[in-house]
Amino acid sequence: MINILYTINFLTNGGPTRVLQNIVYSLDLQKYNVTILTIINENNSKIVEELREYGIKVIELNYNKKLKEILKYRKSIIDEINKVNPDIIHTHGIVTTFLVTNHKIRAKKITTIHNNMYEDYKYTYGKIKGFIINQLHINKLKRFDDVECCSETSYKILKRKLKNVGYIRNGINVKAYKENTRENIRKELGIAKDDIVYVYGGYINRRKRVVELVNMFNTNLNKNEWLLIVGKGEEEKEARKITNNQIKFIGFKTNIIDYFCASDVYTSYSSSEGFSISIIEALSCGLLCFLSDISSHKECFEIDEDYYLGESFNYNDFSKKKKVLSEHLKKIDKEKIKEFQKKYLSAISMTKEYEKKYEQLYEKKGRNK
Image (tube, rainbow, N blue to C red; front, side, top):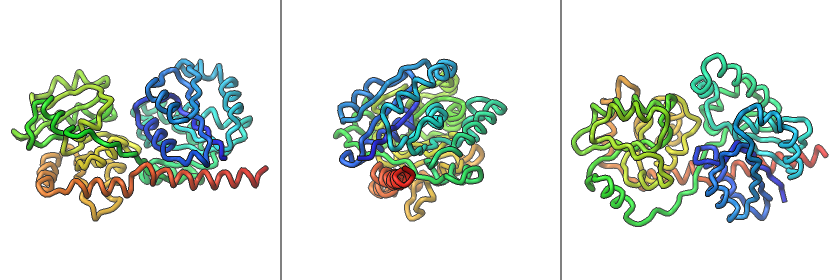
């Protein structure tokens, strides 16, 4: 069997964890022996429990999120990795990516880049600090055997800096939805059966530009239209100040898919993305997409132009593009959208691509012994 160690900062409801879950739940466990190692003490206990029940070994180191503490225990972390004795290490997240490049770790190394590094670090850390972190990250990535971006958009940016880079788009397992979910959620929210519902799901922060999204919808909702904001974040209070009674803040929900099922269109005005899991989940529910015109959002529409998936927009053409989308909504076949997601953005298709990479790395490891 091939021993694979997945390392991640912590297991939570965010995109990197969901990608990791979808990979390990789709792997052939007769061929791969899987261990997950987490560094920081912010794991979602339910996710850890589900992984263990599935037969995945999860090692929780539970260190404080502060970088000083992680660096202080760097040797202990490396020792834990070597105890697993993996053939391949697959990292998710910058912290574990920095750690596994240590020369004492002999395994073959692959990492997934879940964001657009150049934009994301600038928004998160500021222009100067973000630039420094970005350069440090690039230097570490040069020491990996394989770097996989989660979108072609991110790949096109990184290939200017790295020779060992490719891309494998994110994918998800489609869970069975409960009967009457759409009707039940709409009844709970006081929304009529034939009304049009737009939904955003994710963090409410500066990078996601939810305040601007709410502001645009605030003056562009018809009588039979609604906007749901599912999530929480530091800009929620500001966003709530500019809403009307057709915009509903739902808060954080573990059953976010249910709210997608109750909706018709997924919307996001995010300024930077890798390849959004929320968009893939929305497509799996048959939703059209109404997305900001950043490259990673446009990529979704360009995968197969035989499928109409929605519109991209900017602040100036929001109303115009919304009208175009509304016309398509009258005649859209939700099953065609679901078909697109299964064909191009499923957990199975994603995992098959990663398995090819694992086999190539394992063969190289054997030759290098």
